[in-house]
Structures are given as C-alpha cells and as structure tokens.
Image (cartoon, rainbow, N blue to C red; front, side, top):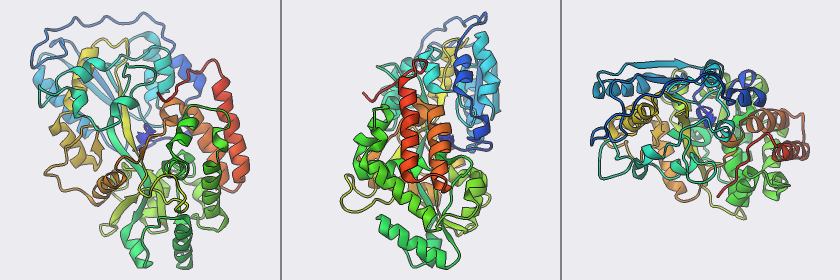
Length: 481
C-alpha cells in the first residue's frame, strides 16, 4: 500500500502498507471525488525558493537558507527515523528552518493545501487517508524525482542515487514513461506470517501446496486454534498473500492483466482456483471466529496470542505488533502456498516491493530541499537507522551489514533470497486506490471471506468493478510497460 500504513497498503498502503495506527481505515478512505478535488489545484500558490549553488556537497542546488517542510505519515514505522534524518538536514544546512510534523490524516490535512497551492516540500503519502497516487499524477500535482535519482548518492559520489536502490523501486515510481513521481522508501515483503514455535507444536512445517495448507489448518482446528485470521474490517490485506498466489498459479501475466484492467482478467482460471482455495478456509471453519469484525490491530493481536496460525500482512507487522508478540514467538514469513506442481511459478514466488511512498509536490516551495531530505534518507547510515529501529528494509540496496536482524526481518530477507527473480509486484493498490480498497477489498474479497458471496459471485462483482474503472473517463489509466 503503498502503503498501507507501512505498506502499499502501500498500501502499499502500503500501503498501506502499512504500518497503521489508524491505518488503512475504510471509514476514512477518501472517495475518488474527494481525491480528484484534492488534486484539482487552484489557489494563489506560494513563492518558489531561489535555487542554491550546486556543489559536490549540495548536488541538487538546495537553497541553504530556505525553509523545508516535511510531513510524515504517523503509522507503524513511527517518526523517529524521519526525525533523525531531518537532524542531518539541519546540520548540513544550519541556516535553514526545518518544519517536521507527523499525522495519520494525510489527505484531510493536506487536501486544502494542495487546493491552495502551498503544499509541504516532502510528504510520506501513506495510511488510511493516503491521497490517490493515480489522481495526483494524472493532475500533474507531483514533481518528477529524476533529478534526485540522477544525483550523486549521499555516500559515494561515483554512484547515482538510482544505482543504490533495490530492484523495482524506480519502476514503481513511474506511471507512464520515464518520469518518476514517487520514491517508495520502505521495502516491504508481503506474505503469510506465522510463528515457527506454533507450527512446531503441531509437528508441522509451512505448507507449500494447498492440500498441505488444509491439513495444517485441520490439525490446528483440532487443538482449538484457527488456521487463519486477517484484518476483517480492512480486507484489502487479504491480497498481500492472495495476489502472489494468483501469480504463482497462473503466471505474472495474470496479475499484469488485472492491473491493466483488461476485459475478463478476473475470470482467468488461476483467479478462480485461488478464490475457491481461500473460500475453502471459510467453508471448513478455519478462519478465526469473529474475524470479519476485527481491524488490523485486533487481528494481529489475536494471531500473536496464538488464536490463529497464519496472517496475511506486510513486513511492518513485526514493528507494529512488537508489544504483543511473545519473545519466544519466532516470527517468520513465507511466500504463499500454491495449489500443486502444475503452478506456473515455483514455491517461493513472493510479492516484494516498495512501500511508504514519498512525494514532492509540484508546487512545493522548496522541492530541491524535499529531494535532498530523501537523498539523506537513502544513505547507508539512515537506512541502517530505519532498519534497526523499525525492523524493516529500505529502498537502499544494503544497510543490513553489522545489524543483528530480528526474527521476522531475518525471515523476510531469506524469503526474498529464496524468491530470486520470482518476485511479483501488483500495482492496483497504487494505481487505483479506491478500486483496490473499497471495491475489490471490502465489497468483493471481504464479502467472500465472510461467506456472503461465493467465489463465482465475488469474481463477477470484482470484474464489474474493474470494467467500470476501465470505462470511467475521469480516471487516469495506467498499464505495465
């Protein structure tokens, strides 16, 4: 999700990806009309800071006396890592006044400022009130971050910033063509999270096929433990494991067709197979009772308490649930189980991508300052600081040397290594936020997993939502290049 709150959720966000303190709350997901209004511009605007002199230490030409404003999403990653990075900015530009703030209400706080033409210089656009990226890009509200990516990296002037990033980060920030509108700072591993201790108590290993998954869930059920739980109030968490499973079963082209809003994309046999597999969890009673009424924190807490084995989530969950995860939990994540040996992609196929989307508004007074703050955050030291404090990777391709990795993070790194080139990156959650969260997530998957729709009915409904979005001239449409 993109966050999601930690993710894209990022969802995610995310989203939101994800972190989420209030994260990803459906009640506060803005309607597309609101988002369009948010990106409509208007107002008198603000004066741009005069450009500074470009030097080896100031390659972006930041005005060293211009104020710089940074608004962070206040979610599961907390704010300390960002505050630490702003202190470096202040040290490098002692004459500049830095205004830092954190909020869970990104859209409602910043919509008026976009309308008035005086947005902040850097925004972490995540969480429940994430502004719709597709709308912002379509309405030309974001600055192209190519100057940042082509600038010398903070640590090694011989390398460009873009050459220090993990695979896929630059591409994720693109919508059409070469401009890069978003820098996803966190690197999120999505998948099925579980306790190794809990599985060992059942004399079981993580299931690689769906028959094995059902066997493990049946074992758990006999001991009074549910197989699965999830954020029932925000069921767009379900795709964190369902989408890569669809890719594993049918190939990444199935996910690309879904992202591209192609006709009948949701009617692919792989989608049908995976929907029916997940519905079987409901039908056989393997879902924790009451799950449809739980939010992300409640479901994560129940899972941490041993009431359910498996939880679809992103790598922010280790930090977000740190206060409730027992010390001997032995947290781990796995790529989703497949169906059987006929799957198009091997076991280990994983959804891993950028989360925590950072943007610099086109009308920012000090866009160079916003980009320089990001350049600082993409240094090895800032990356290590983030990973140490919030138990998650960053977009910087490294930053783990010398760090004692927590169980969940160590498992996430291992899952990424196992996946190799078999990494998928669905884009619905950042291209079409409302479609993904409110329609596919809540009105489609949420209803199916609560037993109120059959898989066939859910697919028909979701395909209808996708077709509506594809035909809506008010929506900017995007396609995999």
